[in-house]
Image (cartoon, rainbow, N blue to C red; front, side, top):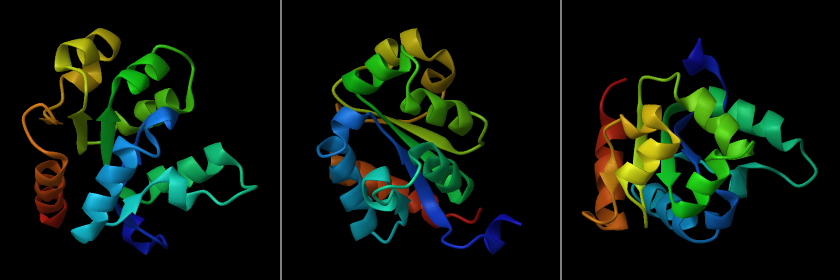
Amino acid sequence: MRASLPDLRDAFLCHAWDDRQGAAKELCDRLESRGVSVWFSEKDVALGTPLLREIDKGLARSRMGIVLVTPALLRRLSAESIAEKELSALLARDQLVPIVHDTTYEALREVSPLLGSRSGLSTAEDSMEDIAAKLAELVALPA
């Protein structure tokens, strides 16, 4: 059923609003330059459309989830936020990869033990370019 949906994407990028023009945009751009189709709110939500409904459609049409974990995201997850709603939906998936940037897995586990228990990547160990390459390899694997 999922393959019949129009505009199927390889990945849904969950991020904090504060990171939309920085680290989230950089990761999205690097993934797209490697041929990965990314649902990214900054380019996929048209002006005047209901944000939550567009996010819901993006989640339904994405094969996997990527969560860019930053200090801003950790703050947002502690409160009722759109990122918190996205994460709730993404945690139900088999393939969800946290990318820790400018924070630690320990800090993530304090806010979201479920997300913190997923294997992921960290910009403290790999460059954003290397992370994009690893994610592109993962996306290329048969579903």
